[in-house]
Every structure is written in C-alpha cells, then in structure tokens.
Image 1 (cartoon, one colour):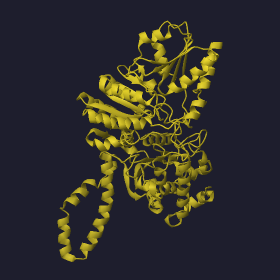
Image 2 (cartoon, rainbow, N blue to C red):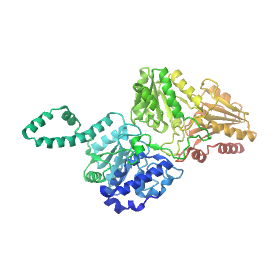
Image 3 (cartoon, rainbow, N blue to C red):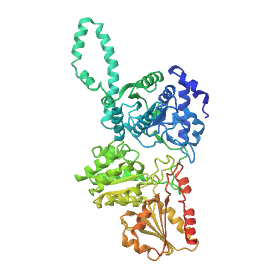
Image 4 (spheres, one colour):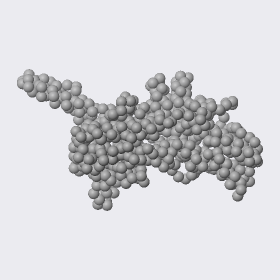
Length: 618
C-alpha cells in the first residue's frame, strides 16, 4: 500500500481538525498495520498515538521545534509525517529505516533513543542549551506512563520543576508499558483519570440539585462531607504540580481539537508544563486493542520460528519460564523479579502460579537489582530476569549492592548477544565486558537446552554468591549432554593440537563447523565449550594451551573487555602460540537479522576460518 503523501502536506496538517481527520487517521493506521505486520516492529503503541502525533505536528514547527520520544517505539507516525513513509518497506531491515528515532536518519529526529525514561533529561538539556545560546524554539519530551515509572524520569521532572526552564512534557497515558503498569505512579494516574470522571459527574449532579431548590442545597451540604469528596480533595492537585510543573489534563488523546487547544495553551505557558493525555493502545485494530501486550512488538509474517540451522526448537526464554515454574514448586525460597518485562522474559506463567513470589518493579533495573540484594539478605533466592541491554542500566547496583556483599542473587540475562532488528540500542553485546571485571561474580553461558537447565540448577542450588547466566534471543539447540554440569571447559571436538578454539555459549555450533572446515585443510583442532567464563580455571587453561600453536576465543560480545580477553589474561607463558580474540569489533552493531549481523561482523564459520588461515600465514 502506498501512502498518500498529499494527506500530510504542511497545509493539510495545519488545518486538520476532528471533523476532517478521519481519512488521514484511517490511512495512517492501515499503513502501519500492513507494514509493521509484514516487517515486524512496534504496532500497538503507534496505533495509539496517531491523533496525538498529528496534533503535535499541527501546533509545533518541526524540525525547528524539537521533540524527543522516550524509548522511541511510538515514533512511527512521526516518521510518516516527516517524509519517511516511502521507506517503511525497509523498517528494521539491514541498512533500512530504524524502528527508533535516529539523528542520522532525519533532521526531524534530534536525539537517538531506545531505552526508557531518558526523554525528559535530554529535553531539559536541549532547552537549557537553547536558553544559553539565546535561541527560540519549543522542546517537547514525549513519554509514556510506563516509562515515567523509571527513576531517571523522576530525577528529570524534579530538576525541570525546580529550574523553571520552558519545557513541554507530553505524558501519553495508556495504562500500559509493554505489559500492564504497576506501582504507585500508575495508581496516581488512575486516580487522576477517575478524578476527571468525578469532576464531570459532580458537575451534572450539582446542576440537578440546584433545580431542587432548598432540599437540593441540603443534600449538597451533606455530600461535601462524604468519602468521595474527601478522596477527590486528596487527588485534585496532581504530583506534577507539587514538582513545580504546570499541569494540563486529562486530554482525550484521540481528539485532535482538544489536543490542539491543550498544546497551544502549553506553548503559551511559561516554565515547565506537563500535558496529560489519555489514549488507547492499539486503537483502530481490534486484535491490538484487545491484546495490547501481545501486539506491542510483532514479528514479521515471514518469521517461521526456526533457528539459523533450520531446526524447530524451543527458545531459551521459554525454557527459562518453564524451568522457573517447576523449580518454584521444589524450592519455596525461589522468587522472581522483573523490570516490566515479565512476559518478555518468560515469567508470565510463574506470575500466575506464584503471584506472592513474583515481583514486577516497573521500568527500574537499578531498583530491581538492589531489591534482589535485599531479598537475598533474608535467605530467599532471587532470580532477576532481565534483557542484557537493560541490565547495563544497573551497573553500580550489581557491583556495589550485590557483588561487594557477595550475595546469592541469580541474574538471568536474556537477549545476550545480538538481538537483530531493534538495532544498536538493543544489542546485548556488552554484558561480558562490564561483568568480567567485577569480583565475586560467576558468569555462565549455555550452548544448548540441556546445559541451560543444568546451569540454572547449579546457579540456584549450588552457588552461594552472585551468578549471571546469559543466553541469547534464539532457539536452544538439542545437543547430547551426558555429564553433570561442571565449570570446567567441555571438550566437544578433537582432531589435534594445532588450534584450540575456546567457544562461548551460542557460538559453539559455529565453532565446531569452522573446526571441520579447518580439519579439511589438515589442521588439527580442539574445540572447548567454555560454559563458565568466570572464574576460568587457571590450571585447566594452562593444560589446554600447553601444546597448541594457536588459541582462538569466539564470543557474541564486543572483543574489548569480553570473555576472550578475560580468559587469555588468565593464561601465562603463552608466547609460544598465536592468540586471536573474535567477537564484535569496538563499535555499535547495526540492525538486521542475526544471520546478517554475524555475516557482516565476520562471525560465520567460513570467515572465522579465513581469519585463522591469515594468521597462520603471517
């Protein structure tokens, strides 16, 4: 379907209102459904902000005015309205349109985003710089109620309110992040929504009672002392006013006329302003409206749920979720923690079966980590399930609150390594680099389904201190696994001592394939499955390296500070052999399928073989 570009001409957008918007809003929603269902991406969140984004473009002058989308998964309509509709067939593909705001993609995107709760801080910085430079433009932070639960958003609101800098925060309240929102702020917003309904109901009631004369006045006086009015008095002043923001709300996020009026008012109000809008996630597409969490992010229609080897399998995430349910039945000390990613991390079944032992703390990875530390001090076994890219937000808490005290917290690090189409902001290729240098922590990486289950048993039942188990966004290979879990490297392939390959986690299949190719060229190769990255047994390492001519480490992490550099730092007296550390270069890995990314960054079997032969030829 080709988008009608004439619908989004500057003249049409500036003159649009509720009565003449239907053709454009329908066109945008149909365009989104067709393209996102085909290419994958964030659907429900974008369907919910169509009118809201149109109203922003009607009132503000982009790109002169600046808008920062929090997370950025709701920026598709903005991209359509800024001349990028013709590129939507490339959405989230290699070298294609990003699923998030990208400065290098368009001058209508002024700040790269991808993680939650950052927009207000960035917007305040831009607004401060504007004032210092004596420039004249508006700055808008567009944030959802889910992202607002993150601590960084509160820090920014506090600073913005105190600074009195002109800034507009648009709070898109749809009662959802990826899953249902939790926490005190969510409850506060619910009270504000109810407060709006209460105001309307109270107004109608007063008009009715006024018509009743003296008797109506007596009833009115009585109502003033009721519990409902007391409750309303408690919520009449929103939290945002207390922080120093001018509050405008609640505005119907699907009514362009109401939104336009609110944005004009915000534009003309000095100091920081928060416009509270209420929208329906998935609006206009019934399946997404009924199941907004399922349609938050969708996979391409062509995704046939097979792994790169062509074999059907079970994802590591699903294996983890099923394991946690079974393990909780055996061990009543086991508890699960998530930072608003319960379903994404496979814990939705656990949360239903053991609700009293499941803790969703909202988008707050720092809090989740230290909260887990507190649970561990009282004899519970906390398992914090988190995506690798979000786990890095809690670095200080990992180091200071868990590892320094050597507490038994299990970090289940999902989406480790490349994740694919979400691009630079979501690739989980840094966790080994920021974990290996922290004392006390054990780091494990499974290469198959059976090993993963044994590894989780070891982490929960046998470890006494912090332990991280990292696993990819992929299907777990079915591999014969005979021995009980051991932290020692497992020899899985052996044709000689010319080359020793130390393979980390998911890279085992690729490493074995490369070894078979090398063997055809008369190289003797040993492949070890490095199940435990840290600690890496020094004596064992010296035995492995004693007779070889070359050591090759292969991992799905950046090379700098990663497993390979850590392991080879443990080795001594290895001047007799060549050492190659293979992984992702010192860069941010772009979007594309996982297979395309491994190919681009030279981590396929044939390219590994070429690199090894080049080193031997030097």
